[in-house]
Length: 259
Image (cartoon, rainbow, N blue to C red; front, side, top):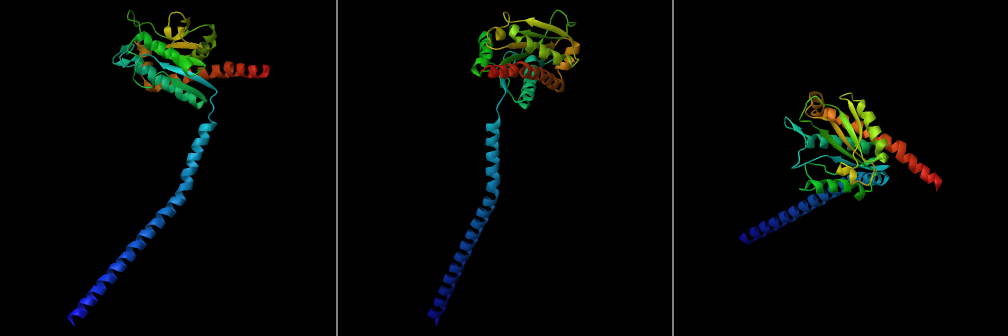
């Protein structure tokens, strides 16, 4: 009688274990099926997004390339007043220029995108900045700076240095749009191809913009305001865009016609 009860208990244990295995297996299969079903539903959307991104990359064909050079950086702060540093002003402005250029299908290449220098040696740093044009087959080079005049805080205004006559129209277009901001006076376009290394060593039409005098009260109020620097960047970009559309694309179309 005792043996019979033990055998029944063993049979029950075996049945329970079998049922447990069946239930676990069913749960596992059901879960796997659900995961597979959900994945199959989501996968086409993910694949479609990847395809769209790749198509956008293929479609993106720039009409021109411009090197943007935010002056100074790292150990070289440039002009500074009340902890407002030239190296920060130029970087903020250059990024605003680049954003506007990219929206116009013009590729922006930066000599720096953060608070760094290209060399611990000033001359070598400037050489590398100028060399960025040839390295990227750029069409134009635009260097951004601010001024300061220790002898007087009455001096104000922006000025644009050009590499040569080939750079004249670029300087004119940029200056025209900067004037619309009405924040300071235009001090003119100046030859800088011999005196400024980033212009002298460059291989493309190049300009260096001094956006104002940081030690002047009026210019300081504009140059120390990031929102206004955004507008400054957009104005400079519009000048570059005019240059590309008026001269670069026109010359390209004419060359194709002559062929």
